[in-house]
Figure 1 (cartoon, rainbow, N blue to C red):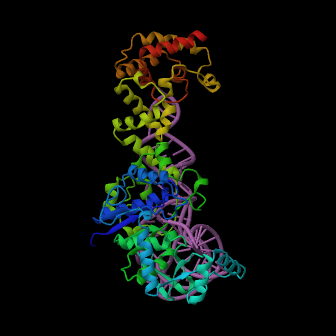
Figure 2 (figure 1 turned 180 degrees about the vertical axis):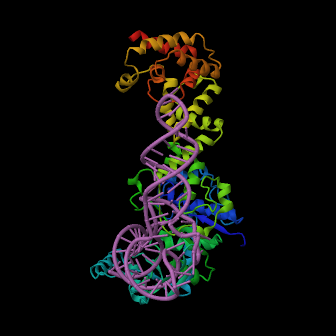
Length: 480
RNA sequence: GCCCCCUUCGUCUAGUGGCCUAGGACAUCUCCCUUUCACGGAGGAAACAGGGAUUCGAAUUCCCUAGGGGGUGCCA
């Protein structure tokens, strides 16, 4: 294959959607795998709905995921500009060209007239197909419309025929183009419609493979017709299944987070997220699901992508994310956790101890933001006890005795040596026999952390240090 | 309505005519590890949408039906 050129073409009418992100991923992988180029194009022809903040979000999210583009906004190439709003001249020029060689024509029908015809079609339960009223309009009539101040659209004259294209994922797909009406390519405000702009840009940017969501299958024949009318080489098409919500419908806002940035914000690691997205519709031939982007690129085959839509399975995402949290270098994870520990006084602990804290907590969180709550007992000195904790850990005659003896033990511990703590604590438990371990550990844990569950107790003691441990125990004893 | 796409455990999927008594992963259940919660380890339950046809033989090929999704815009 000669250097393929692929693109992701989001429109900035919302934050980067996970579906778009996955399509971007597949395009990126395909480009890297075949030493091609991955291009980003912003489709902001809908000036009403496009927003700069969304555009920025698209850039940030793509970068966060590690999907950097070879050409696009901020990375100039010879095919720019890469924002459709900066390419408007081009579209009208091409549209004119189509008019001149008979492939397109001006349409003066008003929106109201069209709406009426659509209504009739609806009532007859048939498809609305534009009736070509303006195809052969008299000069007179035309002049009349112009005098009325009507602004025309430009419609593409759809050639009627059987059209077949070979989808790289689905193989042969057939359409009867007589069923599609002459669609608008230039709106009356002289901006291009989606179907026209994509084709002009994909041609202009030498796009060789169009890899996109299956919601675009029915646009494909229209686009192919345009390529043919323009006398340009039709690219290869590959339509990937969509990402679905748990109820199998299109994943949307009402299902919760849909933007990549929301997931990143919550503490999903970009590496894990990418890994997860790749698994939606694709599976590694060796069955080993946890893979870096580089490994995925090596094994990826476009025609192995599944045809069907895939439910966004958050449980699995959580599992993968937890796995990455536990397996990435501790320094790295510690650094990334800091964002979620902003409200705590981190200077309370040395860097080493902070790492120890994270090494304990990373075992039991699935997303980074959970570290805030999990770390609370190390930073908040005021420990409170819920009824549940009181009932399950701090009730019984043994409690006071255990805590007092534990206090004595703290005098013998080397608080700079976690192993020493672990060792002596073990002996302490033995010395308290026949009292069951549970009745020793739970009062200490509860007093120290206010929790029933959590990190390894001797680690907690080591992390807190002597002063904290002693004061917390005393504080509680004084309330008895 | 019409057009197009899709259909294997709850979920993501492997499977391209015999290797399938359908494999893996997540979730779930049981057990082990263990002072708790996790982590980790072992094991279990769980699916070829339905019906025809082709074939010695079908999850795999063809047809029909059903279900789901998408499109049917001067949105992208």
